[in-house]
Length: 399
Image (cartoon, rainbow, N blue to C red; front, side, top):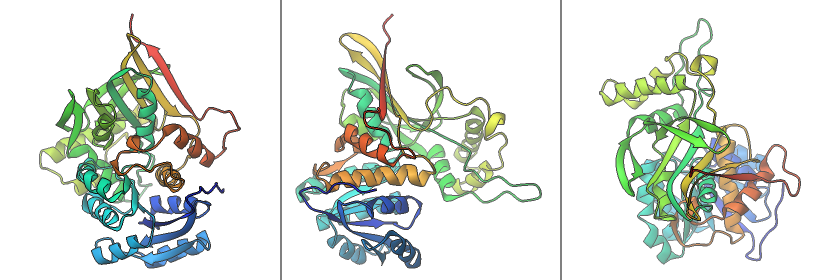
């Protein structure tokens, strides 16, 4: 799949963690794009980076890079126009890589989905503006796609009171033992999810940033789909969305799921908060919980699958609720759902469509209509011309 290069000329891009699950999908898109002159697949695992670069073709080169080495990082950033940071954990390296990009005058995108480093990186907004650097943080699935759906939903409101971004939690990727086998160790993805569900978090409530705990249960309605329970998660969306709609009183990121899964993680979270388990132990213990998936976990939520957003507010004097979801988008594993949106945003940047100095959440710098049109091209079956690639549905709440 190829795309059209802009008058600005093709760009040279560095992808940190480029040989990893998320970065590899982003690299695959970029290597095939006319907007990209050169692609540096940077990774601590030089052999893995070299294999991927060879597979991607002549635009791609491999670079052994440990991003904790500030000198090596600065040298790598000095040679490119744009860096895509896919190397975690972001609580250790998010601010460091962004600071290096600002010092080098290199535009920046990442897939950070932790609230703590999000706040740290937002503190670099003035420095980025002074350097003329555009940085977009949290540009994956959730956050990322979710933020831009929230923009579409909020745009239908004259004023917004509440905005919710949601993603479907699933036990499908949780390894389970077969007969006679021991329980496997939890993956890094599971450990990250357990961390988000058990540690203190920040949310936007009553018009300000407040401390909270994850897994608070709420009921959420999506127009035309009915309502279902959802559970609060510690994610960046609640921290950045009020920056573009300051009147928002409540901004939450929530998970929809079968109740059995959420009962399981809630039991584990209680043990973590009591000091009985640390996050690593809790992650392994979660796999031993019963009824995490399938019919044994309860009915499937009566809400859109995957990622959606809901805004509640007022329009023309009436109370309204607005739902937004992508109708055509990449499918598959989390690598595809995260890496491809990142690459789509990077191509928009290369075309000069994301040139807004400062540090932003996706909603602060990316046009959602352009994004979802471009994203649809990477769906398993790209849409025919004129087919809607996203929906925005409004219902009036006034009786």
